[in-house]
Image (cartoon, rainbow, N blue to C red; front, side, top):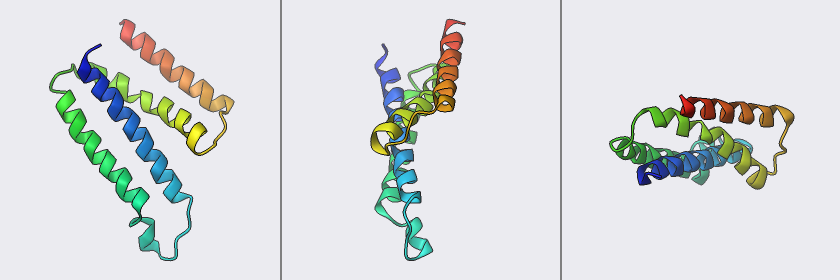
Length: 112
């Protein structure tokens, strides 16, 4: 596998992780509204997003753009799995079906 594709997968994983940080922050109550935006989870999450943006810009100079859409869809799978382990959310039939549908689409897209 191309090492730049691995960078894109890593970026997708870190984006999913940053989404978990944002969800954890949203689930908390704060004394003042400004602290909803100025807390360590939100700042780190947006820092990760910025880093992933730079990483993707670099990786896409070496990888065909058609792979970006395919790899980016894995963020839904990563979010579901990380939510299960970190946030202790349950897998529902809808989540499993949706992720199966996404993976089916990715498989069909890569065959064509």
